[in-house]
Length: 64
Image (tube, rainbow, N blue to C red):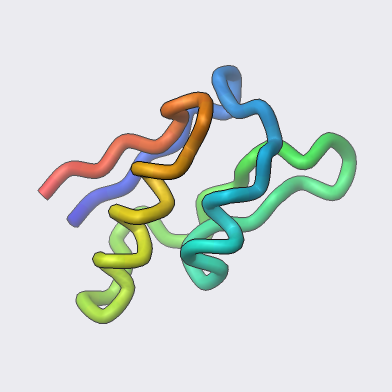
């Protein structure tokens, strides 16, 4: 699995961090998503897919 984020689309809702805190974080200055792992571990894949599904801005892309 590969993950990408579009920081320009992010509205800083924080749903991704709640769903997959080991893969996503937020910048302190404005809350925009920060990708911690572009290739999450196998055990994190369901959480990453959930994060992408609940993102209100559709700022998370998952491949694989």
